[in-house]
Length: 596
Image (cartoon, rainbow, N blue to C red; front, side, top):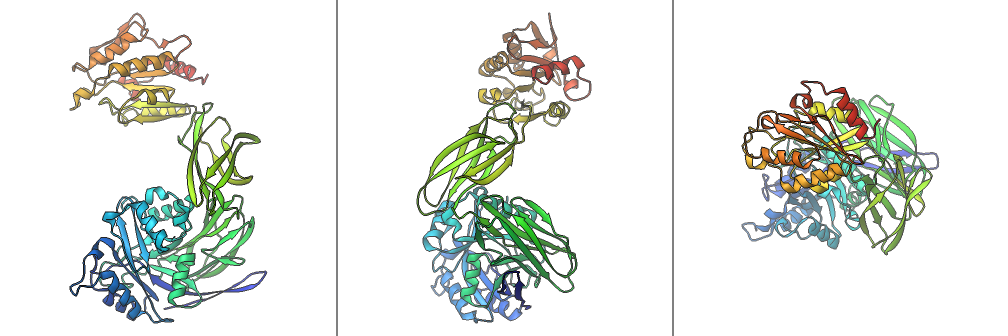
């Protein structure tokens, strides 16, 4: 194994941060769904010289079954870890993997007991970890296995889950273990408040522990001992690498990757890279404030970067892509407020609120102190304060807050006890249109020309899936109602109910714009009568004909409701782009939406 002495020279002092040792901290044996025994695994990893640190983390539910000699599997794993550990040469780690797919998988280290997924949910295992002050890791986060309820944040749990896999090989012989899905979830976890370092592991299921590929978790420690390994996991002094011996240092004055610094508003970050014969293709510093590309090249370099820390919670980590395709991801360095009170994850509840209307925002208010706190939150739009409120937040908790704001300014600044905590830009739209798809009229692809027309007017179109309700209808300025597909198999769902007819009529009379798309094909089913009833209840002498394909009446133009909304009728060809929409109709739509 290649081991590097990390000596970082800074202006103020010379700091020796230790050596780099390489490990594989997620692997399985026949004690769960792998092959071989823990003894074989530790012996293979130690004799291979491929890693300095190896963990066995068999699945929790398989540990419930005793071995033929009557001993418990976890006890044997612990015994073998002690047997094969040689302080200063090779460290064997015991652990297990809690697996509840859809919630997430977690590896838990250095405990004398385990807990079965059949008796726990995610919140239960969190409490179990806290109660035992265990060291734990989020594993392969994503769609398949789960992302921990979108990394819902718990300050107490954050003390003990200190690592996240940005790379997982699942026993593959490919070095390509750092996946975009894991990398995105890594940043998501950091943004939610989790203090987790980056790891990359092989997740072995065959007898190639540590040797199936080059994925490694690198430990930045000054000596190879069991205590130092666990300390590095707890303090996140690690990085993830697809290269078996790539060295990086990511430091600032007095700290290295994984560390948390307080009340430092400006800093110089230093990145050092060395891997002879392995030049880089790209290097960048990622942060909650954006991505900074580094102007570097070659197989050995040092670069310094001056950064501002504008918020009360800031993080930075490094990602390096080698020319051969291997990737390296560091753990972050955090710059935070010593108040230990934070506001994170601020967002609009609706991704695109309508400009000029009240809209909801949400944010997470975090109290990382061990006493209840009254936290003051101020939201400013330019110089104007649009929210000023105090919240009682219990000790070591994260409160999810929802409030309603009124402003037309896109830039919002959030302050906690006077400190700038978060910034967002609201993506306003001019109006919201709902496209009904709940009456056997799922024409989203066919109606793209009509959808595009509304998008170009500055609006947003959202399909109504499930059931058309009064709440949905009245929350938008436009309701697009295509007549149903006559060829549908579920013909009983084509009908629009009297209740829906009544609130659609109310919607129009109260200012909504109803856009009716006539039938693609003649509707011979009795459900057509419900649409005829809708026309009857509208204050308009217009009738449906030809099974909903056309209309007739004393006035077949656009319906104008005095002091209210209106109705527009489009043929199937007009709505699908096969024919042009009349310019007068386009102008009428813009007029009703206040755009001219």
